[in-house]
Image 1 (cartoon, rainbow, N blue to C red):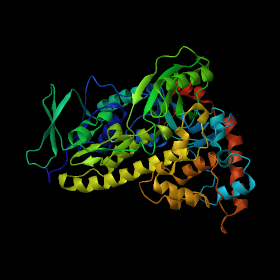
Image 2: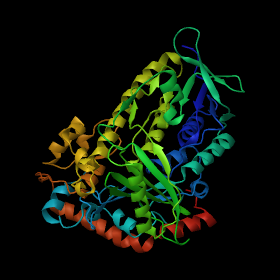
Image 3: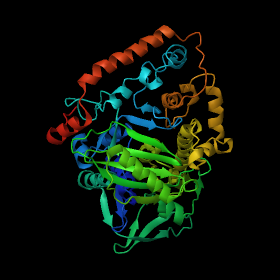
Image 4: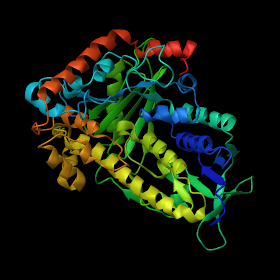
Length: 518
């Protein structure tokens, strides 16, 4: 195969990861390669509620999906960022937003220095962006006349992951020509040349399934990369302690109840609770550290949260999910590459899981090797980029914990204090925090083409969490200009709040009438 063209791509496993990858490859390389996806009829996807980044809009458009169809089929809603409750000190007024919109005038002058010197009584995100105000009022990020995938305010989605996988499956098979095989994979046939490459998969009823490139989307099982090749998982539990979750679906108390515009993340004594609003229900889950909290304690906290937030006491039995936080030592080995949970998993804070799937699928497609001879080059580049991305995601999530002042000592938990121990903080993050005590995070801190989070996201978290640092204004920075941008954000807020519908109203309109085409 060294010089022959790569023609057959076999994806093992469905769900969001498998079908997103299949869709991107089939849409980008129609007629040049055959994409086959095989999944077992007995393996159900994890399928808890999911949040996406705004990048999902471009990915869905890239594979030819209509936004109206997606929203209807996947019980999806609009997401404009995250709201963090109780992460700073646990007091009743403790909350802040990480919106998807960049600060007004970001990069044009030092907004942080002027905020600290003249407006410190106003929460940073509330001053520099209109979007937290939209989120607080449950506004949608667009109007009924805004074309599909276009935005008034930048947005991603909340969605039902199980329905999303089924929707993508139908689209890939019916519109993109992906070959679908429903069968059990029993084993792997290696090439007879001793190279170690995978030649084919041994299936229960379809015979050998041959391919040139194999993509492992088998979830935490990691059948190809982890089990067959033995590529180890690099544990990150010494940095991020959470390894368990309880997930449950809760109906709204009334069918016309508001749909939140953000993922709510509420801190607990040994973890946090996510709350994702879909049109028909809420997806709620408690992520926690089994070393700091028992399953019964987590269940009690989850139920207490649901009762307090909805008044509902009749709660279904939560589904238990366990995971080993970490990522693979390599993601692309020989002619096999892992995408999704098979490549690694850490807690779902900041909704990075689906974003990494998108990045991986697009990276594979954009740099698809022409033949086996060039595959090793592509694999080295892919491994370097995604090791870097995983490290940055872990550092960014760790930042939320490092800045917390919570103790929870009275509750008998060392969870938050343990997260602040220097031994658990990556060295690069420690260095950045030292720099940021004297200046705000800037684009120059993040120079790689493989960056995941922009400097603005670090600013939202740092100053939302009350980071103690003094950003000194430099000579070229202009307080007058910063005030102009603060005024712009306030003007946009005043203009958008009465002009944008609430989430439920817009989603109901889309369900009936759809969205206009661009």
